[in-house]
Length: 217
Length: 90
Image 1 (cartoon, rainbow over the protein chains, first blue to last red):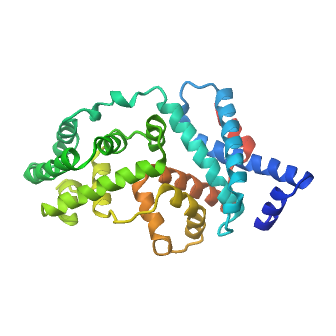
Image 2: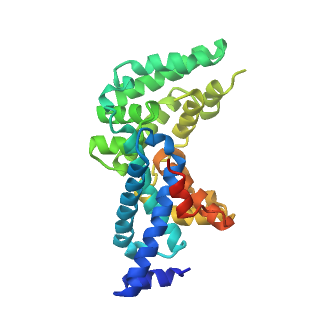
């Protein structure tokens, strides 16, 4: 078991120490990738065992390159192995979600259509709660609808509907829109901010709004 | 999205901050966050911005949960071996 300092030293060293450290790191990263794959085996439906194992080896290799490229960023505020695992898990998550969603065209998802949000609310949210709250629920839904249509750009609205309502994984949206996680997160942040302002401007405070939708009684 | 998730999303809307950390900043802090949490520290106080990001970002949250669970298993000495993990892929 190496200390953080020993990991850094060996990985930066030339020769046998470096070779051994890289081989050990590769094994550690592959284990983390397979751990994540095992938690998400349903996403690999239809894929042969050997293909899954090969994908795991590819992810571990990609993670190894990321770890080596980011060595100067390691501050030592966690164990080196914990820090390295996150690269493996990140690579594994992107691969798993892409495998599941790669054949789905985001353009075909129904909530991208105009007005589909209202229909969705009626079918999935409003009908699930008791009648005497339905008027106020309707008002909340109306505010959300207005903010979506009036205050968000087309791209912000599309990203919000895809990720929040269609539950498309963020990395798949990133992949298909050829952007990055930070940009998508920022769009969702702006959307939340505008929705918050819209709801508060119409007098809907947090406790009241949550009570409207969270209680069955 | 079911009603439970919709309610969680509404809560996230109300808890939106003017400034929030990005996915890259969350990734940068996550290994420290996980180790602090596993050692019993109050991460909501020490790294509130990470906690808030994880509530809002499903991708980062999934990575965090996997990392936390793996480290927890290692701490308990129960982490599966490479052979076990390879064998369980069918």
